[in-house]
Structures are given as structure tokens and as C-alpha cells.
Image 1 (spheres, rainbow, N blue to C red):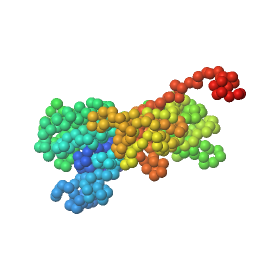
Image 2 (image 1 turned 90 degrees about the vertical axis):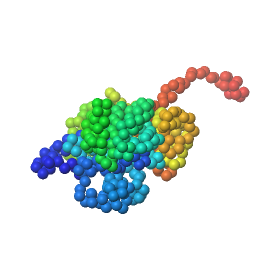
Image 3 (image 1 turned 60 degrees about the vertical axis):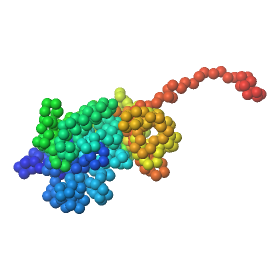
Image 4 (image 1 turned 120 degrees about the horizontal axis):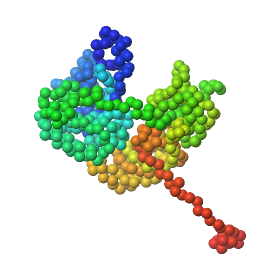
Length: 466
């Protein structure tokens, strides 16, 4: 589905060409329970003319059956599709929606606000470029607001919109807006958030969603930026080429061997650029070779960039398996088997150090053990607290030990090669999501000491005859 441009009727080919070259923004809505996340997305879809007549008719009928807005349309029902979500008026699972305007394409993930569904919020945020953090003007900053903010800083989301919603319920008060803005700014100052924009709005009434609200003339004063939410989403900077400028990384997903004359190594390029003739190094084995061809469906490519799925053939026959990472020889990826990590625990059963789990990073799966919980983070104060275990939704910095070395980047440099999940070995449930901070190079600090123990010295020590 796409924005209903006038070009569709007059010149469909030109419209398709323009649509193909629009930039894409991935963003999420997050925040506490009942802050209006689903209603906001429904309003965005409605205001951007992304709904067909049958969808509007169905939404009006559902609003009478499930709605929480009396006789008015409940826009949240456009996103909340599960029966349990409609009955309770909450969001449980992540819902993805696509829409577009004349300027940009969007993929939005509506994430749940309940504390027990924080794991679902992490899933939606892992691929987002920006986030809309919803704050109820009547309630202000809550614990879940702070938790989601901390998770966004961990996951590296660079652009944050603090959408102070339900301004209609506080008579569009500028004092309420300023109070919440100052309170959040004080908390956000302790986080690594690069860009924060504050917008007062009403998702239910449509204030400051697409058009400036006449109910908040103070928001257009020089003190505030005065942008609408749609105006922000259409103009926020998206660096599509950032991962292309990073060092080349290709996690091998499959060894392509259709016949005796062809052996290629297939996967999606996580970062960087590769060309035939480039010297590569395979980690963790350390073997080197040269790229012979870049094969895709339909032929060979002169070069490949981040995001493309390709098959590389090499000039040498070297052993490469699923889970290995191909990098350039002049900027190879690091390897280690012990790390400091930041962990978000997602299971009802607590994390206990020393218990073995399966760790999946990219296409590789190994056995892992949390050797030590260094500290847990209090999401309200960001204080470091001592902990012997980690309960559901707990966030902690831990030491991690693997049964073999893996190739990795730190998470801030590359999400694909620095992010991982932990899997329970018995139930096969995903129990945690984590980010690699750096390796613990303890083995490099252990050196064998030279000793000279002969037969006579050993006999004397053991009181034995040699």
C-alpha cells in the first residue's frame, strides 16, 4: 500500500520510479501502558490517507464492539489485531505497519508497554533508526518510560521523539509540557542519546500529528521547534550509507555447492563494500584468500555493499563453514572467547551464573556461560546494584565465557556482529538478548614461568625414590 499520489492516475511509471528511490525510515513507538502508542499509529495511517473504505468501515464497526473511546473511532484497533489485545485494550505482540508519504517510506513497529512484554519491545527496537517515546501528559514519566529509554540507549537508537500525548486531557497546558520535558531531560542527560525532540500532541484528537494544532499556539513560539510529528518523521536524518563505510563483514550463512565446479559462500553483507580481487581473511580460522567473483541471481556483480545477499567465490580452496565471518585482510574482525556484555533478561526463570546456555550470534551457535554478574542497572536511577541473579526484565553487565572463540565486533560498531541472544538448552526458548562490549583478554596476561625441576629436586619434594 502506498500514499495516494496524483501521479498514480497520470504517470504510473514516474510514480513507481519516485517511490523506489524514496528513503526508508524504520521507527518504533514505545512507552508505558495506555500512553497511546497504538492510537498514534492508527492516527498516522488515517491522516496519511493509507486506509481503504472497507478498512474504515471495519474500524468503525470494531470501535462499537471493542473500542474504548465511546462513540468515537478507536484508532488503536487498526494495529491491535489479536483477540486478547482488543478485549483488554492493550498491545501484547509487536505489530509492524508500512506507510508512505510523498517524501519518505516508513516501517513502524508498535511495541507493548507492559513490563512483562519488555522482551517484545527489545525485538522491535533492534532494527529501528528512530523511536517515538510516548508519555501520558496526565501521568508523566513512569518506570517503564525510563526502562524503554535505557534500552533505546543500549540498542543504539540515535533519534528520539518524546511525544507528550493526551494534551487534550490537561487543557493543552504549556506548564504541563514544560514540566515533563524538564523531568525527562534530566533523566536523559545520564544516557547516551544523541538527538531528542519534544512534541506535545493528542493522538486521539489529531493535534500536532500532521497539521499544527490551533489549540497549542504557544508551541509555535521561538522557544520550541514547533514541528508536527509527521514533519519530524519526514525530515529526520537517516544515514543509509553508514554501514557501507564500516569495515567489510559477511557472516557465512550457507556453503553453496551445486556441483563439482562451483563452491561459494553465501550470506547477507552486514557492513562494508567488497569487490573481486580484494584480499579477505576468514575468522576465527585466520585463513586468507582473494575474492574471485561476486555471484547473485542473474550474473556477477562488480561490487557488493552492506545489505545485499551475495555468494562469494574465492581463488583458493580454504575451509569455510556456516558461522564463520569473512572480512577484509587489512581490517579483520576480532576473535575471543570471553567478553564483557550487557544483558537484558527475558524469561520468568532467573539467570543464575554458571548455568550453560546456547549463544547465537549472527549465523553461529556456541555454548556460553555467564561467569559473573558485575552489576545490575536500576532503570529509575541508573545506579549500579550488586546482584547474584537476574530476574525478568533485569538489565545487567556480565562476564561471558564461551566454549570456543568467535569472530565479533563490539555492538556500538556493528549491531549484526555484536548482538546476540541466549537460548535455553532444554526448552529452546530465547531467554536473553545481549550486546558485546569488549573481549576479556585474560589469556594474554598469563605467561608460563620457566622452572628447572630435575629428578633429584622432585624426589626431595615428594619424598620418593626416582
